[in-house]
Image (cartoon, rainbow, N blue to C red):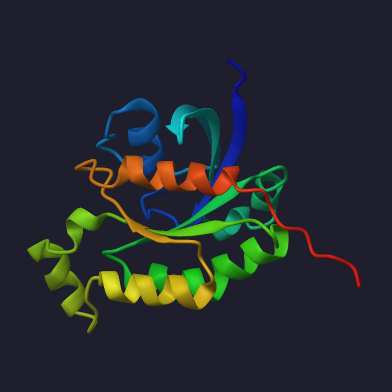
Length: 188
């Protein structure tokens, strides 16, 4: 059986849940400690629509220190996950203010998904109380969907690496998007 190989790059603010999402999906374990990322790669096998796909998962650092290095991750990509943390409304603002312009600049014709990570924290009393101190609250599904539509994401998904909810679906959908042939602009 011939294997289809696709490359997925994941971007978003530091500590928004990118690395945990990738580790839970590719290794099936939830790391209890936060590990700052420079750049890491994982591989996972995904089956969609009867096709076996080897998915190369490229993790990137969201730190500003790596703004000049991160673009080296984009070449030969097939789909991008733009992530934010549901318990951090500022990270959703950064999707619109930083991440989308970067993705569009380096990957203008590539499909991308907006992914709300840390869904399990949306109703966490400690999180709600901390956010209330700064007149904020966790991001709602409706807010995430509205931003996804505004920025032209192929889809909006939410997940929790901690509980596992929605993790497989994120990568199933991303893999499906990677299999759709990219349309190239025609010259007139």
